[in-house]
Length: 508
Image (tube, rainbow, N blue to C red; front, top):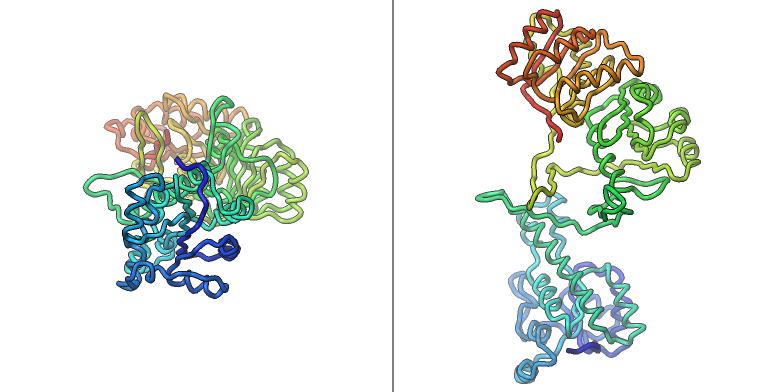
């Protein structure tokens, strides 16, 4: 096996030519013979460097509007030939095929073209054939060939050319090949997803190029990695790196706050809202959100959907929190919040979020559509003798948004655009009801005149009875139980209103 290979011949054909010039000059300095095509060939000639057109090597012109340029035995033979196989070397000599030791090629921007909203015809033409074939061939023969499949690797190659005088090690070539196969598999995945209509059978494929190693996973003895581009999602102004648990809570916080348009602040702990309020000004929203449960707010994730000003920052800075997220901060607010160096301050950027959710489970993966439904007053059907008031309908809508993002089984109690308390993650809906009432009382809330929302139907009338006796005046539930009438009858007996939505919001 060849351990060190000297680059003598190179094939260069790229879409992106940024930072390519230094490599061309280094190859020219080392006396490397360069083969190229189309725009890259012109680019190299304009640098004053000798270049051989691929069509002069193959004796075939570029045909079919450029669809066929490099697909020829004289190109692929030179890349795939094994230097240590006598038979391969004899055939290279027989057919006058030069060994190609370096291939620099990238791919047409398929994913970018799809995302741009281009026509189907333009998208199809961005499916690279020659480029992907060159990448795979050179990577397959990494024992003898260097493959560069991304402009991100130009600086590394430039350094190798300068410091190793055009020779590469087997480890370097293998690493370049690994990167190349990553690029080719990612490319094919995006093409598949463009064509995929999940018929006749769904196939699960994901490919994310960017990653970030986390300090650890859910616990210190677990390794953790985030796959994605956090820099596109957030501009971090302050604080340490986000942890695995931070990211899980931040994800839940973003999903919850996106339900609200009026100035709103939410405080989350272990993905559940322990405080949330909507007000005319973000400062009052913070004060009322914190009042919901100031104990649980300790060490939580705070998210706002409006700019954080100095007054609000001063109030927030009085408690210990892990992460604070908002679409904007005033300069004065940033100065206040940065005083504590470990607090993570994030400015949220306008990024489109995925419409699908998936996670590993057993020996496979489960995937589902994101729950993008939330029912407002127009989707609430009154099933009791008493009609809810306009304010009760508004509060039921508010509570229903919170229920949707709270672990099942859950009961949410709300009033005047403020979370009073919730029972979360209970094995019994009655336990969730009791937990919510206990927490409301603990933090001084009078639930008389409040509303409550449930993530699923009531199989019995017990929760309604408990809530009504505590002063709840209106109830929202999806309905659908064979015992719905028991809850309705209890509401009528207690003189409170109930609406059904027909939509369940389990969150496991």
